[in-house]
Length: 347
Image (tube, rainbow, N blue to C red):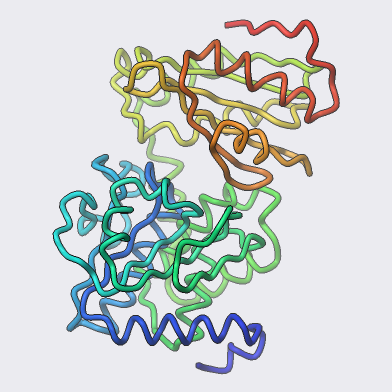
């Protein structure tokens, strides 16, 4: 442990030492983020995984996708992305399973079976959890991104990072702070970003690949979603939606849709917003919630079995888009202090 440890609580240092011991004792390690991975989940898997591969080349270290979906196109630029494999195809019973950016086992999807076969389990995360599922959990809900925690762990353990690793972690931080526009963009987030850039991370590459390289087909879908935006609660709540048929007709894949909620969030005067889209499964809808103030939307997500943070959360709903909106919008109206009586869902 190096001099950076002076600012780290002793309990956390103890957890880091224990995790390092588990890593050093393991011959096989599997690392996974949550299902439908975002930039933080993937950036944390790759950043941690690549750093461990460089430090321990003799170990069998696998980077897992929690489901059989592909790596979202906008994240394929990250070093090591081509090494990600579906957890269902991973054959080993690993000595160590490391979960990143995932608060509950259910969100690990196919990776949960790998976790069940592992000798030891470790977790790095910044989401609130109902209960811990790992032998050692490092959970900081105040951290802007799991990538921030991974950066601190690697520094504390004196595990060096390359420019490619730094870029993976920066991608996780940039995406989970909405390009440092969300309320979680605190001084620690900016300090972490500065360290990563100093280590060789390329902010311009992250910006180009994630935000400035959208396919024309996606932009047409974004335009469609923008045209469907409606507000309720005297303009304090906004929502929009996309049907599965929209994605099919415009040739857009579900993994490209993560940024659509920010289109809804951009409406002036809106405090909280909801974007919903049909999945490929019959009568299944994914909802994404955002808050632009100090109102906590995670409780609404939790009501539907989802979760997340105060400013960003998500859930899956069994039903139609109309049914999803009819159940969720009254809760959002009440959250902003407006009476939902007489609310009509307009599509």
